[in-house]
Length: 191
Image (cartoon, rainbow, N blue to C red; front, side, top):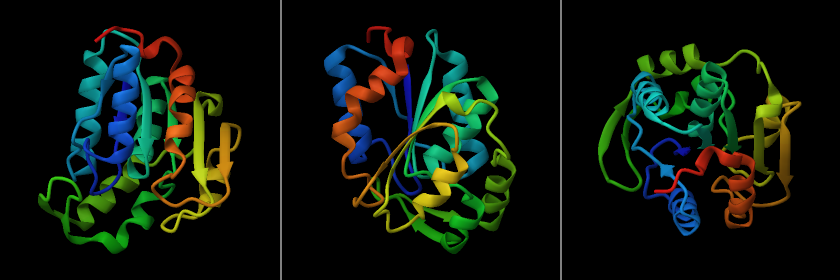
């Protein structure tokens, strides 16, 4: 199974999630992308439940804040993860987002709090136990995050660092089949 974790204020209807879902459907492979709650503890708990319920190995694919969660979950469960323009220090990167927010796809409003920032700090992984389980995909043109932080954070991991682009990761479709290959047999249960 491939478990896709979207970014902050995003959701299953995001462009990247929909493209990966469609590609995996073409291949007859299992794809799960939940709407992650704004509370980081609840988001990770939901993912923990999905991982525990899977009857096949899981590969995590996370974008931005979803990549931060994917790192935490990969370390807890010994999983491999694809990280797309990841947030490295979420408690710092999202501090200026404290306050009322609106989901970009559902229109749902929520309050992002200092308690959520504290929860993000607790989830941070101080050091990767096995960097070879990770694949970092970043574009240098990311206008929200400094790609160099991710390159340093995921040293020892497979890294694809591309010129240009932006936070949305503009070359996503170029890597869909490679993500499936990286996942190996984890997505092979037919849907």
